[in-house]
Every structure is written in C-alpha cells, then in structure tokens.
Amino acid sequence: MNELLRILLLAFAACLVLASKGVKAHEDTALDNETLQRFLSDQLEARDGATGKHANNWAVLVSTSRFWFNYRHLANALSMYRTVKRLGIPDSQIILMLADDVACNPRNAFPGTVYNNADRALDLYSNNIEVDYRGYEVTVDTFLRVLTDKVDRTTTPRSKRLLTDENSNIFIYLTGHGGNEFLKFQDAEEVSAFDIADAFAQMWETKRYHGILFMIDTCQANTMYSKFYSPNILAVGSSELDESSYSHHADSDVGVAVIDRFTYYNLEFLEKVEKGSELTMKDLFDSYDPVKIHSHAGVRTDLYNRNISEVPITDFFGNVQVVEIDEDDDEE
Image (cartoon, rainbow, N blue to C red; front, side, top):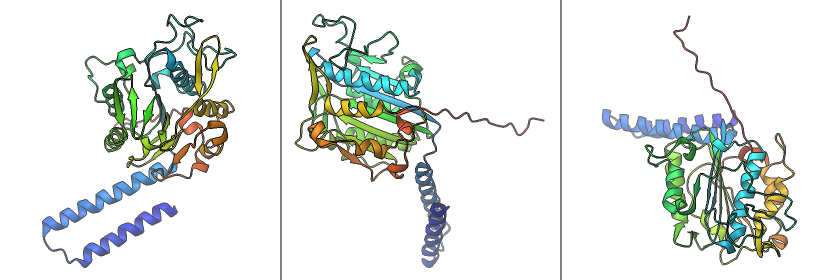
C-alpha cells in the first residue's frame, strides 16, 4: 500500500508540473498525457516486480567451453541442471546448452558418464538429461536469439525456445573461460557484457521476464554484469576484475578437474534447499567465503526491486505454476 501511495503522489506531482506549464495546445496536452501514462505504467511494472509475484520459472544453463580439459565446465552446468530439476523446474522449461564432448570422449576412463566429485557417487550424465543445443550449435548468436526468442520458428521446435512472458522468473547460468567484460564461446568467439545487457533490455521491453537471476562462473566474472541497465535483474559472479576463478579439485582417474570452486560452494548450499524452503537469496550470498572460493564473488542488487532477504531461493531455483482461468462474460 505504501508503494502504491508513493506512485500516486508522484503522479499527482507530475500533474501539478504539467498544469504549471499552462499547456494550451491540444497536441502538447496529448503528448503530456501520453508521457504521464507511460510514467505510471513504468512505475506500476516496477512495483509488480517488487512484489515477487511470478507465475512460472525457467532456466537457461550454458557451458560455453569445449574440449576434454574443460571437463569441469560441463560438470558445472550439469550440476546446476540437476539442482533446478530436483527443485521442480521441468525439462520443458529448461534450455541446456553444452558442447557435450566429454561423456563419450575417448579419454574418459568412465565412458558415458560425467562426475562433479572425485568419489564419483553421482553420474550427472544420466538417461534423463535433455540437451537442447549441443556441439557447434552453442554459439553467441544462438544464445542471444534464445534469450530474445528471435529464432527461426519454422525450424526451431518449441522445446528449444524460451517461451517466457512477463510473469516468468528466469535463472541464467553461464560457465566457461572469460575476461574483462567478455566470455568465450567454444574458443572461437566472444559475447560481451554489452551484448547480454542489450539482450536483457530487449527481453524487458517485449515482456519476456518478471525477474532474472544471472549467475556466471568464469575469470573476472563480475565484469559481465557491469553493463546491465534493465529492471528486476539480480546478478552474481565468481570473481572480480583482474581475478581468476579456480577449479575445486581433480579426479586422478579422470585426469582433470571436475568442478569449479564457485559452483561447488553454490551447490553445497543448494543441496540443503528443498521445495518450500524458507532460505533466501541473501542466505546464499552470505555463504560465499573468499577463502574457500579463492576469489571474491560479487552480487549486484541495484537493479532488483526486492530486498534479497525476502526473496526465497526457490523463486529462481524452484518452480511455481499458476493457472489463470479466463472467464467468458458471455457464458450463461
């Protein structure tokens, strides 16, 4: 109620300003009315974003690396995939993008498997994973088109599209090799912080999200969200400018590192989360320990209109499904 009162007071003040101008021309009056309506619309949209009322959850999970020595990046993405599925987001609302060149790699001592821990207690590459984009399909262009839904609809099945709307919360997770304001894709091209910021702006303008949680695990990760400017985005990265992100541990039989530190400690926390959990995003962020992570994780909250201490973890990692019933006024 206080927020609505604030908006009404702002609108009243705007009306006083317009009246003080002594606007006489009909065209100018119409223009000012349009400006006022746009202002009110923007304020109400921001207010709605602050309430946390969303109707569905989606996830976009991307490992931007390829080659055997980047095993851990695939494991990072698959670990997040397992987590959001466990907490209720169905495959139909997950876009998974992987090079997918590890499980059947001839160097893999355990063919057809991917593990994120040296004890190999959990195979992440089980029969029930659904990879939407694999191999050379994982490009900057594909990623940005998926976000903005600018795909070829004659050849792209609905299962490979991000069919979100203004009621959707989206968890976007990226892992790979990066630097100051860029992330490499398949060791062949780069996506910049500006590219992602502009894609999010297009998504907001076309009502493709209610809220976004952007998480990135790469070197100098925090620079990738520095250019964001659209409302209702919560961003977190694994490392500061000029800082590397590090792997957690290796499996001597696999022969390479199997997971990164930042993702490992996120997963350690998320394993405590169940459907209906009261743990919040602040609880997750407060768990970040630079001594353990070996880098300084960053969180950006200025674009997000809710107090993170009031945002349940499951608002992004879990799932809600709200069924809306349209009543037919003509029905007797």
